[in-house]
Picture 1 (tube, helix red, strand yellow):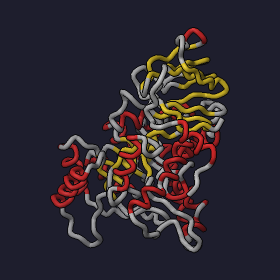
Picture 2 (cartoon, helix red, strand yellow; picture 1 turned 90 degrees about the horizontal axis):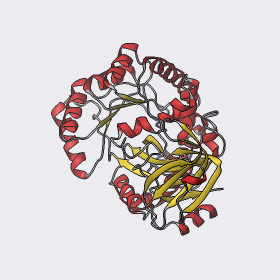
Picture 3 (cartoon, one colour; picture 1 turned 60 degrees about the vertical axis):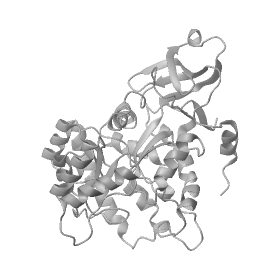
Picture 4 (cartoon, helix red, strand yellow; picture 1 turned 30 degrees about the vertical axis):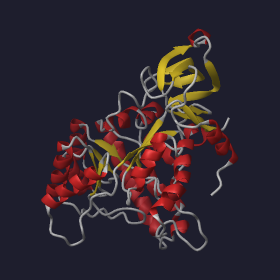
Length: 407
């Protein structure tokens, strides 16, 4: 699968994400550093870390290599808290995105396309929730070493789910946590309900006791838990069980939202992924009328988000990107603004909030001394119009290496 010429040039210039050499000064017309805007900003980078943030010519160290991005708005590298980066479709005629069979190594190789498109959207870190055959672990290691160009990957391995018709068994669920962690998972993912693609009924499949057993087992090992639930009962049980984040969800009641705000449970509502399924319904071959249920779910999902914002629930941007959705990762922020957030609040859901969720608030999500040198240059001003981010990313750095340059 040939790469676009611009990307080939970038790959030729960057041997690994941790670029070495002289101190690098990156200049922006305006920089949103994760909390405030800085005009005529200068970010000084030493290796893979930010050394200083200043303003104007005097902030450029003598002898520094300078990248002039003063035509653009700078942002911290963005975080997508819910992806499926190994879900790849090679577009072979006569096939659909789902159901292709191939060797895991082939999938990992082809999934470089998803990784590239994710970077081109300004996303430098993803939390990937559900992949088999160690494929997400392989991509995590390859991108970490620089052998594959892509975002930093926080990987869960296969999600934990209940077999249809099985008797609830909290102990067996807890044992699955040990299996996942011993295999190398960074997070635990739980499928607490039905829901995905054109199915949005949200029927709960994992009991409250099973959720609690999973969370307790994971927390005992110092690992966090994300629980997928399309319906309100599963969301409520996930919150009470102590989940660190809840994925999806519609018709969530105010008492549950208040409890999320009290506990600091992060909600990753993934509103936009159902918009994507409507747009891509012909690719998937969804049955006629499927878009009606998807549109209805979007509206119920969005109504819950509006109430969550008012009640102070922490939220993180999660695209739930699969197959042909990569590159559209940040469009979730448009729904957050529609639901009542300011653009700056929406950007926080892709920077500071998910950084804290990942336990990386001291090195991701901000542009500040000591933080990872993850930077994004956007044509336009996302703080004025959030949709500038959707098509305006022109340059991306991760760990001090320039991985995208489309100026």
